[in-house]
Image (cartoon, rainbow, N blue to C red; front, side):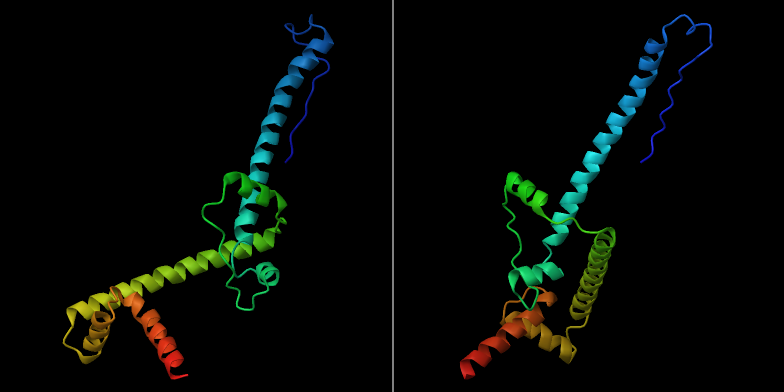
Length: 175
């Protein structure tokens, strides 16, 4: 952030020639100080946003520092409480280690990629559900629809989790 400080010491215009030099310097300096003050406020706002961004990114469960902190090998740490008070969050925000530019960019890019994958997955499930509805007579579709009916799975997205749940249940019963 570069601000120009230009303070004319001598001004030979007719209007300002009769004013004392100190008054002219003061009048020229005040607008510059206002600009600096505004720039400082913007820097403070930027710092606050940066701290909150670093705090939010540090709370992601698969960040390397979270794996070490929570002692988890799978990276599935507990998510932060949604009911945290703003005061508590601000205190934690101030204590978080500020991330570097490349780390922040990498984390944001990762989140954007994840969002793209999730949107693609939703579109795929929507297309598959539409196909199931349009072609219920096909054997594969009948099996899936019957599975959904038997286990009260409302959406196609829930079929695989329900199958996994059944597998775990059957494994526990047989063991």
